[in-house]
Length: 281
Image 1 (cartoon, helix red, strand yellow):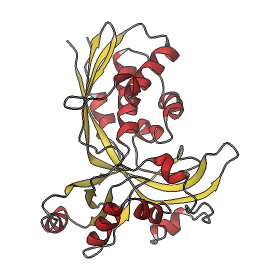
Image 2 (tube, one colour; image 1 turned 30 degrees about the vertical axis):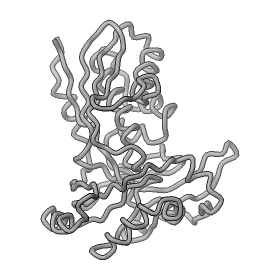
Image 3 (cartoon, one colour; image 1 turned 90 degrees about the vertical axis):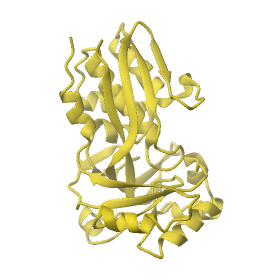
């Protein structure tokens, strides 16, 4: 029986500017998405019906973004088949690392192949955008400059870096941050060249620091070793280093009860290459 196993990669926001607010309430932004070689593992096997489990986690399948993606693809393509989906989670929920969006995109890519739908990346990205603004990033599978609500993507080649990511023991809700009265919503747009010259910050950082002391504590600790930044609207914070050895040296100094991981930045998601090597009956 065919079984597809894929990495569902995490991402970092290397900066995040909120540049305005649309009439429908959505915020416009600028950001750079950096894909990582760290993430969840997704396994998909053919089945008569759709099912989803996350081993070790008690999560309602119908509320899971990956299951919603599978059902939406089924409806759009008229696919008669099903699949058993298993997601082995490593990406912390509410961390700003894109775990749910990555899972949804990975399921779209895998089922498109498994069901022989042959939908193009733009077609899959359009389905993904109905589920969340970050899903198209993972469908296209390339680190990118993003604008709009995050769906207008320009692929980027980013300098090789290794990241130490700290995951404070809290979950930050995107809606909570974007609705906060103190959130900056009028940052002037910058150019890609300005970003590469060192420009940009995370406009959500001050709000998240106030709402979650654990995040503030982690940022203050990490700043002792290297410039530190919040990723997205989540709880995770990170610093970048020239080598994994340097990142490991800092990680070894972390308080014993803090959760963290080290990951390398990727320009292209390995999920795309792994899918190309899948052999179907």
